[in-house]
Image (cartoon, rainbow, N blue to C red; front, side):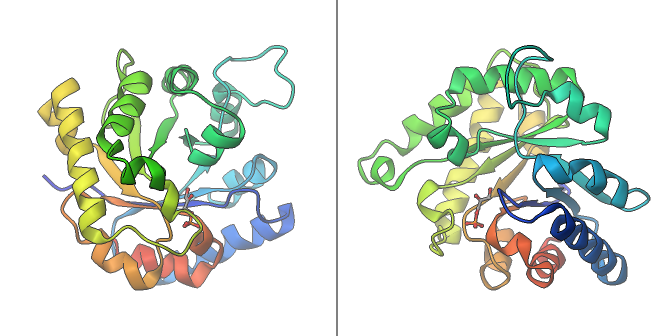
Length: 253
Ligand code: 13P
């Protein structure tokens, strides 16, 4: 079975509203002129830029994702935005469980599960992130950590291959310039796919897209994207450079 690849840009806390609009417009133009495959593109700017980004991609093949959502629909949660609000805006995807939020906002697996449930209820595709620290990897905890992240956030939810994309982001490779080797990434992606097969179904495992994130760039993307279980990338730094981002997309066949 062939899974349509996904190239997603996580812009993190970067770009003013004007810069975000310019970036969306530039990427849209480049993709229109140079698109040479069917892989999906998701752009995830800050909340501030979501309304105009949704408008700017209308009539194109680009999707807009948020970098986070809250688990509740509304209420006294100062500073938060709900999945329902994002859906009303025209946002189609939401990143859930990025390691930066797990670390700086103390987001737990249980809380992330509530977000996944809310995203499903509001027709958003969750880009669910997981990954280990270097210390966890070096002390032999890799599989335990990943299993717990998967089990505690995804079991007993109605995730499907349509409303879920999984992103493996080893923390030690994020923003560091260090990339997991293609073999290291493939090993983990294969583990995640087996986990989905075991806990949901073989069919769902075959259809679920699993992205790699962590210093993906045009010069390492080809090897990573050619691995059998790597179905795309969740890209930070290089997603802010339109030429690099579109070049990675062109490699995602
Ligand atoms: P970098 O591509 O900058 O390493 O960031 C990866 C990431 O965190 C994407 O969510």
